[in-house]
Length: 301
Image 1 (tube, rainbow, N blue to C red):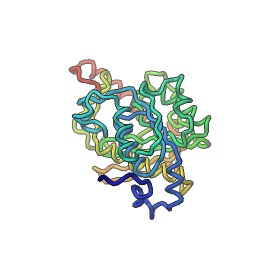
Image 2: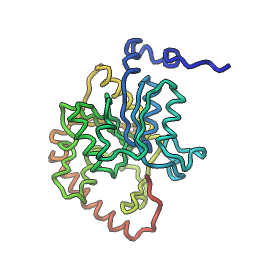
Image 3: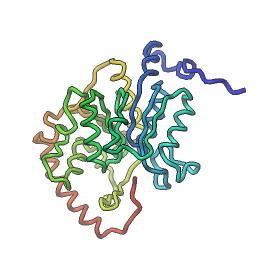
Image 4: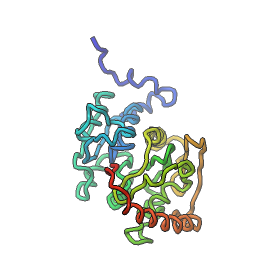
């Protein structure tokens, strides 16, 4: 007979780095995870193993073969299946007692509040190109007093930013309103990876195609994102340890073996960031021109 599930036994090995009481606190917390692709699936699995007891999951997409290099739930047995359905099953296979709400159409403007209802933290893993929806979700998180953690895979590393409700906002960090809509993606990329350590080993820039939203990625970076996100989530939910939210950023690259932490007062309005943005606007304009002459490839969701 299989051993019946028991929460305390299943997550007993977490005790030591958390107390028994803290494990029970985590059991009562809800994480809202937007996006279950590149990093989202790994976030759900890692947080579930940490002892988080409730999730709200949102994603409108289905698994494809192109997802196999990096997405936690992507495998032959899940091809064509909705990501939210697959990750719900995987999470319940880790902890059958989980309370899970799902949004199989993703987060839409009219469902943001219901998606965030009861959430103790928002874990941002929505598509990098979904800027306008990201801005709306963060605005509601701030209004509702919900902390948010954003970690992005960068080459073979991770960059993570923490946004606390009473601290610097997403808008203040990225300064989206400073530029026309067509340039906001550049503001996001420069603001989300100020150190850009991964650029030193990018061997083929022709793999970046803005028109098809195709760019190189690695699964190991997504796993690193899940680890740092879970650690920051634990600290926030338990009120333990120092939280270095923006204007601090944190970047670790497993390829270059470099960890960088910096403070950028003013975010993208900082003079150093403005210099990076000026160069990036030119580079992305060139990439956009080149992408128009490149062969069409399947989009990397």
